[in-house]
Length: 445
Ligand code: ME8
Ligand code: MG
Image 1 (cartoon, helix red, strand yellow):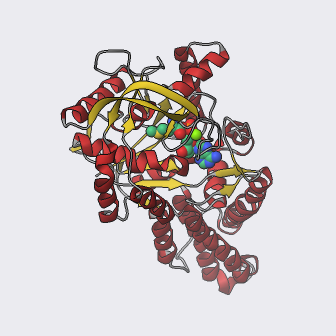
Image 2 (tube, helix red, strand yellow):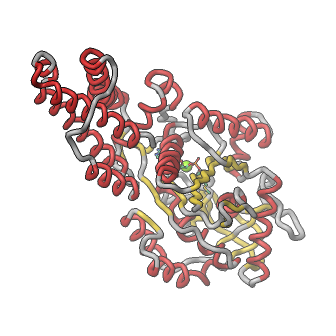
């Protein structure tokens, strides 16, 4: 069975930071976990390279948009390599193949009568690439607080208002489509206020995919960006099944409405299948604020990896923050987890177990075992299936603590001295070694 999951495609206005790494690492974790569960997994990520935000970032750095996007897209690709993530497709929105799929989606929506020409005057947030319909000139963006800009242009509109009921009904009929629950409630509340039609083209910017119509229209960047999820696997099959629809879109909570409302509406209009699930995780905060490129309060992954390695960084991110909620990043907490959980917890169990097996049994693991780990494994699988990574890891580390206590209680160093206790010593050493083997398998994702 195929399992196709995606991360957001990241803006190339600045280099990757640990917030991007957080989502992409979580996606790679799910990919490994689902692979262990027997699925054939495809993981897509990529870069979001068009739009006003990128056009301006390029201007500010004195490069052409194409130059900027080539450079920064490559930085993202390299970042995933440095982190040891298995990316199956890296999709760039500037690829001609992607543009074709975007135009196809537009044409389908047009043919089904969901697109019309009109003109838009209203407020726009460039940082979020978001139309803020109910704002007045000078008002801040409700999402990020930046001052909105007034846009007046002729556009193509998508009849989003036709989809209020359809998208609402879809969410109501599919309670697991959007998780966690708090995010779902947010979207339902938003839908109940009703949707306005959405401008999906721009004429005042040049850096975008041209519409297949007369004039200088380029696609609104979110119409282009969301379609990446489909274009990355367009026409492709795995195990005799088409890869689209995606089994999971993993995103951060600030881009919820684009994914849980716009995207399903576009797909419904074009009569394409909808993704099966959206999971919106929380934010990594730095000194209680969302880390962001534009605020500059950034932590980069590479220096941390150079110091403690990729596995330790993965462990930290998934254990420290409850997935789905916001959580703070601090260097102190990284060091704390590294020392307490990895060096002392897992590291110590491994080194003492291997040392004893070497000392008492010439390095050959004896048997049989003293414990039944079925319940630990079941609890871990249950947690990981729900993307409750921190609880899954707690379960594993509780098992490590159990093994530590068990070793102290059995006192192999005493058993070794007593000829009548040799079988007990075998069982103790085997149990410790078996614990390590199982822990190693469970922490692989
Ligand atoms: O929104 N904490 O791109 P983007 C947790 N191009 N996750 C974070 C984070 C933080 N502090 N900062 C970033 C875009 N992320 C669009 C997406 S998708 C069709 C288009 C992660 O570069 C998180 O996954 O602003 C968030 O949703 C994403 O990076 C936003 O990246
Ligand atoms: Mg952002």
